[in-house]
Image (cartoon, rainbow, N blue to C red):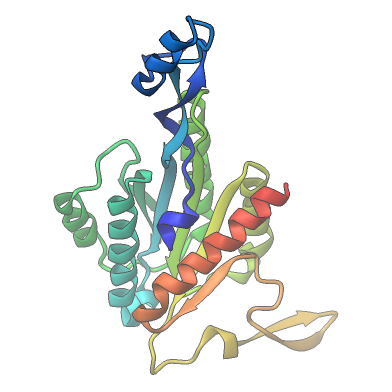
Amino acid sequence: QLRLLLEPTMATKLKGDYKSGKRINMRRVITYIASQYRKDKIWLRRTKKSKREYQIILAIDNSKSMRMCGELALESLAVISKALSKLEVGEIGVCSFGDEVQHVHKLDEPFTDMAGAKVTSHFTFDKESTCIEDGMRSILSVLEESRKNLSGEIDYRQLVFFISDGRFDSAKRNELGKLIRRAIEHKQFVVLLIVEDVAGESILETKQVSFRKGKMNVLDYMENYPFPFYIVLKDMQTLPHVLAEALRQWFQIMKQE
């Protein structure tokens, strides 16, 4: 399903009948000679798209609030990275955010089994805070700088998957929302994968209290949530389906634009 959704963006296969090109189509040579050299469209060009070129960053919340669902977060990282590596979709990076932001695996480095083990060992889920807005700002900076250095002939797509419990400083919602809108403007797809402990309270049931003009208001935590695309995950078996569905929605939006 992911193979179909992550459509090819780089032309790497030879195709077609052209008057000039990179290689002769041997199937057309006999016709060319028999036509007394009039049917001269015997050349192949690199026009058939077969290689997917994406830049994908997986950003994981390394704060204390993730202790109960940290194992699920790392399983999600393993499933997504392994699937993307098998598809050879392009470059994969991994970022950690908590008290500070660290890019533990850079985009231009190959994501091998050894690299995956090294990345996993970095996460301790013991940081005091969840500075997700700093993580978003740092990731967008990396992606924008990387895009400047890419070949203009290649259509790169950029995706960001945040893996977190989805709970962060409500005062940062406006700032985070602006960063996400900036990403959308640059055709960068941002998805939040909310991992939850089966025994714990779901974020969908959580309430938040706000005070306005001295009056207390009780609201759903997800009201005015800054992430337009998010997935609530408690069961790893549902991850491939929900991930594919999120990507499908993104491609529909890109085609409409």
